[in-house]
Length: 333
Ligand code: GZL
Ligand code: ZN
Image 1 (cartoon, rainbow, N blue to C red):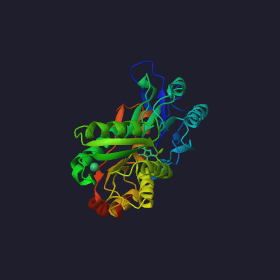
Image 2 (cartoon, protein in one colour):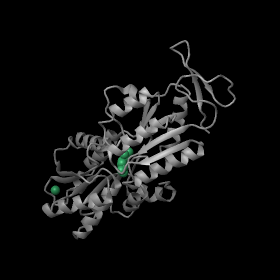
Image 3 (cartoon, rainbow, N blue to C red):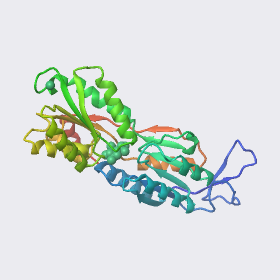
Image 4 (tube, rainbow, N blue to C red):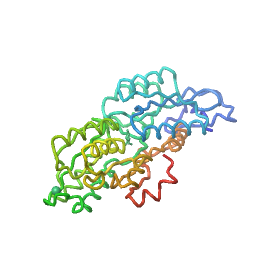
C-alpha cells in the first residue's frame, strides 16, 4: 500500500523531513504532502486506446494502483493533446498527490507542467518523453529507449538484407509505417532505424507515412504504398498494430507477408507475436508496456522525498519467429 507522506516544511531548506503518515503523530506540515494517513491519490492522463500495447499498459497501471491501494483517477485522451492537458489541469484542481502521464506528443506541455509545479504536485512521465526547457518540471521519466528499439530493427535488416532482396536487384526497397506524428516513439524509432541501415547503402526507405499506431492506419497506408509501388520488399512498422494492418493489405494484394514482403515491427504484443510465430512477420523488437509496478514504486519514493533517477529505462528484448513460438504460451500481454 502506498502511503501519504507528511513532508513537513523544514526550517532547513536543503533537507526534506519526510514522515510516513501511518503511525506518524506530527502536526500537518505545510509542505507538498497531505494531511493524515491513507493511500495516495494519483491522477493518470493516458494517451488513448489506440493499440494492443496501450491496452496492456493501461491494464498494468490500473492493476498496480489497485494492488498498492492507490486512489487512481484515470483519463483516456483519445490521442488528443488538448484532452491530456485538460485532464492534467483537472488533477491540479483536485489537488491529487502526484500526476503521471504518457505525453501523446513531445512538445506543448511546458505551461501545464509549470502549473503543476506551482501547485506543488510532482509529475512522473511514463512511456513517452516530453521536450521541455526546464526538466525540473518532471521528477523522472520511466520508459523504453525508442532510439535503441529503432537501431535493433535496423540491425536485423542489415543482417538479413540479402534474404530481403526479393527481386535480386541489389537494392532493398523498404517502406516505413510511422507512429503518431510528433510522438517520441515515432521520432526516435525512425531515427534509430535510419542511423543503423545507413551502414548499408543497398537499403533504401522509398516511402514513409504515419499510420498513427493503429491497425486501420497501417492497413490504409500500406494499401496506398502497394498501389504505387509493386517492388516493395520490406515494411518497417513502428508498432505491431500497424504491421498487422499491413499484413491485411499485403495479402489482399496477393502477396505473402513474411515471405514476399519482410515485416519488422515493434512492441511484441500477443497478436504481433502470433503473426511472428505464423511466419507473417519476420522480427519484432519488444517494447514493454508493463510499467505499472515501477510507476507506483517511483510515486511512493517521490512522495517520500527520496531521490529518484531522472531516467528509468525499461528492460526489453527482441524476437525472431522461433523465439516467438517459444515465448507465446507465457506472454502476459
Ligand atoms: C511505446 C508506445 C507506443 C507503442 C504503440 O512506448 O508509446 O504507443 O509502441 C502505442 O503500440 O500506441
Ligand atoms: Zn531488391
